[in-house]
Amino acid sequence: MKRPALLIVLSIFLLTQSFGDSNAEKKKPIIVWQPSHQTDTGKDFSEALTCGAIVDAAMKTKPGFKEYKVWSLGKEEYHHADSGSNTKIEHTTAILDGKISGYAYELQQSNKYHPKIFIAVHNNGGTRRNAVWGYIHYGDTYEPENRELAARLTKAISSVTDLENRGVWLDSTTGRNDYRCQTTGKLGFYSLDENMNTAPYRVLLEIGDNAASRELLISDDGRKKIGEAIKKELAAWIGEKF
Image (cartoon, rainbow, N blue to C red; front, top):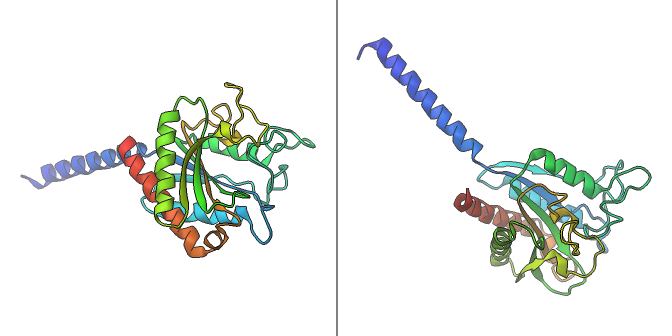
């Protein structure tokens, strides 16, 4: 083959490979992580710092995706930016002194990224259980898929820690909230409500109890181990799903 012809064939090959890689990249789903921004969660314990560290560890763990962290911590232009509950109207949808809430800001940011997957990371409190819980939204179109994902993530976390796997729960079952889903009228978690969050796959993890699991949650090694376990199992689920 003459040299010019060889160069043409090589160029076509490289372009084809580049195009294929581009298509493969486009198929990777966008992931949004929402760590708790609550700092008023017990003596000498910041749920925000713990959950932020878990999410950072997850995002650093391979394989890489298009991943974003939405966090209102320290943003004084929003009310309840470092406190409040994901289950209370006052802390989520309410406008106070002309300000939207930290949770509202985080959901607005998330929706701008158009994610396929949304993972909220929290710690529980007052349960006296050294455990992990997965929460999904009641009556959601993707409830079966979200249940599977939540179950896999809680199992993965439990397998690398001493946390009891408490399984998957509907957000309508907590009984401690006054926020209701506009579609079902049921009690729910603001961050998991399909009317507020456009991601089809949405899971909230309650990892450990701020008293019963304290040593694990304040440990750098523990946080890293949990984050890595979440990411590896999430990647495995993505590989099967997409």
